[in-house]
Structure formats: C-alpha cells, structure tokens
Amino acid sequence: MSIRTPSREIAGLALLLSGVVALVLALAWWGIIFVNVAANTSLSIPAAIPCLVNTSDLCSLAMSLCGSGHWLGITRYWEGLFWAGVALMAAAAAFQLAFAGTASAETAIAAKRK
Image 1: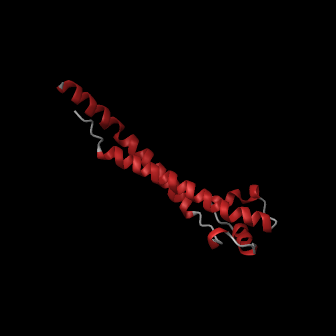
Image 2: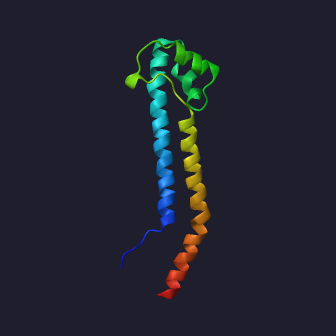
Image 3: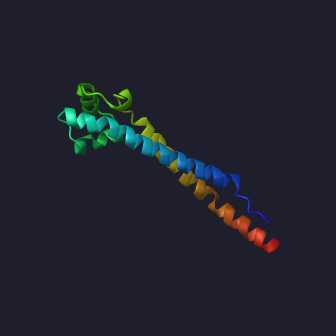
C-alpha cells in the first residue's frame, strides 16, 4: 500500500519553498548591489541593511552614485522581492495552520477504518 501525499500538503510546501527561494534571491540581489555601493560610496554595509526591506531616498541616492560595474549589469535593487518572499512564507504558515486540524481528523478517521 502506498502512502499518498494530500495536495494541500504539496501546496503548502510549494508556498514555503517559493518564499524561501524569493528571500534567498532578494538577499543575493541586495548583496550584489550594496557590496559595490558600500565599496564605492560613503554608505556602509550596516547602514545599507534597511535597504533590504525599504528603498529610502538614501538607498536610492547611494545606488545612483555608485559608479562601479555590478555583476550581470544589475544596478538597482527592488525590495518587492523580499516582501513577496515574506508574504509567501506567511501564506504557507497560514495554510499549514488552517489544515493542521483537518489532517489530524483525517488520520483519526483512517485509523478507525482499519
């Protein structure tokens, strides 16, 4: 007898993995931009950390003033990818919580049938 994974578990896992991938990509994108920005402007890496979640005027100015070439020619960072990752992970958590009670009820019903 094979064990079948419910589609809602697969959907929850897909949401979680998508969120993790989006956050990793956002962090990598931020790093590609702001390591060069810190090296070529007066903005330090600790001062650039808020730019990961919000592109303020200071972040935009620092990105504009950075005259060095960036890897793959990427010159701007967009924080929307970070927030998309957070939203996907929050949706995965909500999805798992919403169906946690359903899964245990289904397990109990299946155990009674045996």
